[in-house]
Image (cartoon, rainbow, N blue to C red; front, side, top):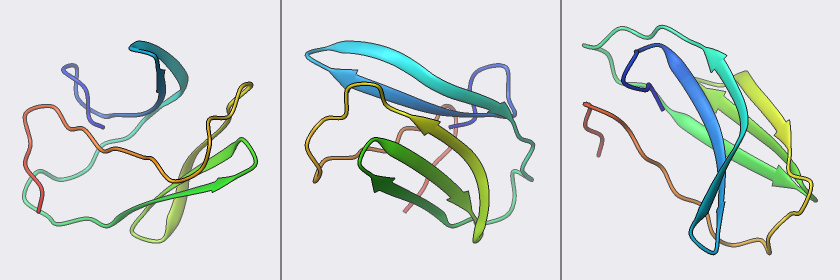
Length: 79
């Protein structure tokens, strides 16, 4: 996610309506270019890739069951 300040990729855990930021890294991507985002999960370890490169990772101290993930962006679109 590039946040309102621009240039941040954020891994957020949402459970029972409560959001917890697990990791935030600065990241600047061109606005006029398509990118591929991939999220991997392994027993609480989360890995976020952009264009095949690992850009953010975090550990979820209370991992939720596998099978649910979401993507959100601020002031941007994706297909």
